[in-house]
Image (cartoon, rainbow over all chains, first blue to last red; front, side):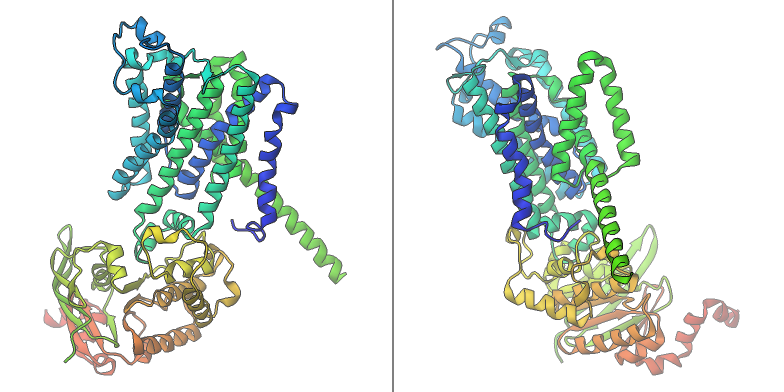
Length: 358
Length: 253
């Protein structure tokens, strides 16, 4: 909903304040909570991508875990290689009897290549996939199924190629980043600041795209694809655009999250995590960037609490939450807040009216 | 004689064996208006759909400005200079009136040209002008979803105007309008036909008379008659198809 004043500079400053507050979190959060904040904020970047694809373009993506995983594995491969002596192989390759470094591992020895790959590879995959499905005018249901199948295939591939991917356990046991020990306070601080900075940049970027005519056209295509076509526009590029941006966001999120956790594994990229990502956004409100950030934090905080005491219950609880949200608050928490705000505004207007007539 | 702007050559459209258009040939000349009438199911909307590429001719050719557009992608047909107003108002509900017109007014419709927030000065001026023409300047910041049915009709007519297309196709532009609004639409269409070419589908005979344009009568996917509305009103074949086939069947039987 466009509201007056939403595009004013003051609104922009207000929107950036929470990011600024988070930048100073190392001063007031305990290490464990700081880690959670960094992790959830990384995931929030991915969630903002889902807002663009699902909320703004109306296409439900059920395979964002793949794009997240590509970013995560790219950076994890670099971390594994960075810790090695010359001619040494990563630990899990040795256990699996691999004798020579696979060719596709080698470029990741360079930090620049790994960082670029974490963004470029998922974006490219999103580009190719979106180009194929939208050129053929596939509907949202088929796209949901295709992306879901992709998540299943990707997780299966990672597990089956244990000798070069780390298999079920994924990639872990890495402890340096660009020459700094990862457990070191200084490295933690830089990682936290990088996460906050990238999240703020992603937010600004998504917001800026939404304000351009291309952003309006994304909404226009969602509401009336044929209408847009009969006004002389090809609808596919706008959907491809949001898919690619969401792919880049997912890759960045995957890279950051892997560094915070010190781990990436198939359990974070398959079907269930891909659905979980959609649930974060559904809870927060799929048309609101901020809603998605808040939904990500709320759901993951709950998960952190519940699954440590009662791990088996989490998937059921998540399913229940999703059903409740879809039935009772289709626009999520942000929709509830907007409704409350509208009611308050209406009341104060009524009061003013009564006062002026009385 | 001038070249026709739009020409249909023996166009057939078949849906699962049903012949919606059964060999239509039609020429429409620049800067004129043409009205197409006919009972329900005569193929009027299908005819416009075939021009704009929403349905494709199973046989025959559609030629616009000498270019064969029979198989061209829809958005390219529109970019070539044809704009269509649909029967049910097709406005973009979650955008404001102003944004709806802004999308219609852009001249460059390739995707990379849209990473700006505003319109250029000429486009902005045109949007303001159209808002005045359709009488919606006061509603420019409202969401299209909040408009009444008649207002949506006007907004869509405004989008067609803003597109400045050479050939304008209007499918029942007055449905859901009050008599006063209908009169206003007739005046608008007559004015449009000075610089543009307009094809109008309608049932409302009083409205068609006000347009003062040549009329083509369609019946069962074929062109039945061409002519002046007053002559057609008294034509026994036209009367027969409008009053129902039963009567003629009785006469024949």
